[in-house]
Length: 149
Image (cartoon, rainbow, N blue to C red; front, side, top):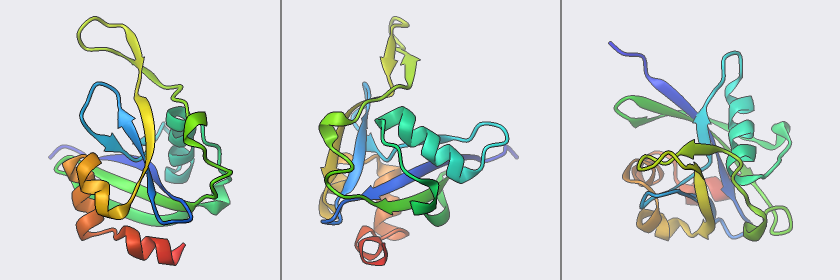
């Protein structure tokens, strides 16, 4: 049996309960900032590092609410944290991805994320990957999270 990988990420909500989604470069879907932990890194540390790498957003570790681990795909779990931010803290035009990967077609280095948007919970299905949309529909209610934060 192969080990399940764990991706650590942050669900960022604004005052209106909209969730921050990042567009995965050269794909059709939007995602929360997330990624695998480096050796020796805690899930919280990994989530914060991925957040900075994929959005440029820097947040204090103690602000993150640990939501725990969720089954995401057949081979992958998500360890998610949540945080509420103010409009002053996170401006979409200031978001920048510092994490690059080689484009499949020609090896050119391109950013992992190339656009950012606030998405209302009702509209997540329109943008998010099926796996993420399903998670928000079935296991992790954005509306409930909005009230809890």
